Length: 196
Length: 196
DNA sequence: GCATTAATTGACACGGTGTAAAGTTGACAC
DNA sequence: GTGTCAACTTTACACCGTGTCAATTAATGC
Image 1 (tube, each protein chain N blue to C red):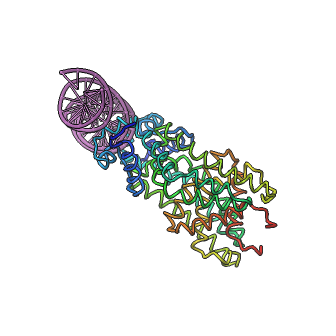
Image 2 (cartoon, chains in turn red, brown, blue, green):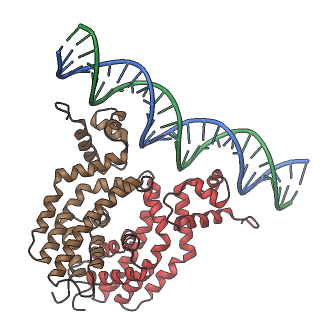
């Protein structure tokens, strides 16, 4: 499709992504249009609403940054403990990429149910990753005996929230490496049986 | 001041609080006015902006629910460990009260710098509480040796965020008791030296 | 030459915040 | 009584950002 066409759609997605990664506070449709070099109305020729544009941008980032590859790495781990560490590294390292988007989508939760649902959906995918990591721990008999899989997944999912990353990295000024190592330690202290 | 006047200001604050505690999604000035039984414009006779009304509501809740008393309880604890537990219980039990407000203020972060600053200010107060609890642990030589006070405070503050409470209680369906006990366990596993 | 497609311009409706002005009501003073 | 002050009302409007619509232009393919 779109042989020689400049593929405006892709340009829009890339510009949106760029604008989102510089923490520029608010991002209006007109800001995006200006950055792309088209009229605000032309945006609506490609995306029906602002929410859909943002959601499409998340999918675009996913495909460019290849989340699946990151996930695959953690699935390849042999022990449950390695898998947990690998998952934390994979997802934790992905958060900075989608942080701007996370903020934008969260800010329109109230007022756009569709945007909220889309974001929740993505977070549910993360939760599935947490669930798999917890299951791997349980299979290795490494899960604390007083935690069932559900509760353990809830805890890991909470620990790995974008919001916690924002607090530690953006608000507290931690480096990404500090974030990952502390969260890993915290997750292990939280989930692993104490007999090591 | 306002001798026999029906103290509309207080009624506004109470109604706002009520509307906010029922998780009714969006809350417009007209909704509040209707609930109070006055015109939307009368709201502006008492509060210059929506942001200021919400901020005044937080202060109002603080004074009604007497946060200081809760804090005092944790300050009275003898050991650092007790102080930590008491602080978690005090603040964690307060979160449900201010949860609605938290959502409302967060949703206007982007677009109203004043509202954002006001909320950050309140969260910094919580951080001071975390700092004090961490200092008490350090005084008792109970703090993990590989954590300095700053990092430990960052971690505790993050753990005790309203967002984490929302995830576990609202999204995952935990009871308040489950939340408090798990967070307490997590905080101890995170901060306490391993020699018990 | 003609149709299609992408983009343009300009106008407008809607919802929510905030402002402004003129009118109502009731309590108090004296 | 008359006057005045304050709280509140009604009506109207400006501003902003989203989303819609219609008419137009420019480039491409056949």
